[in-house]
Image (cartoon, rainbow, N blue to C red; front, side):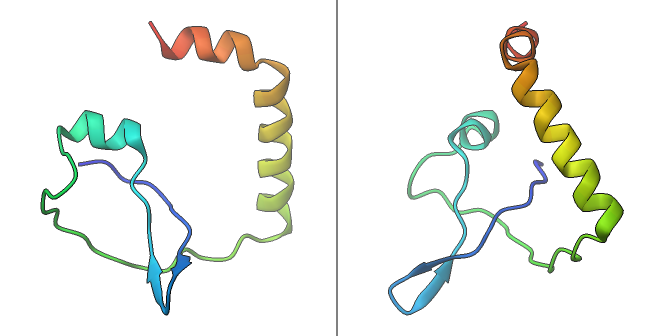
Length: 73
């Protein structure tokens, strides 16, 4: 099982959620396979959480090469 947060996008008059390619590969699924899916809304972030996310994004941007290297080990 892989747990992630995805945004709902508009496709025609419907909503859709994408499955990242890496998640599909890890699960061993391909187009046309059936998956069990559950939905629950993500809570809105408070001011401290927004600040933490911004700091984390800056850290990731600053150390992108090193983090990519680590992820491939």
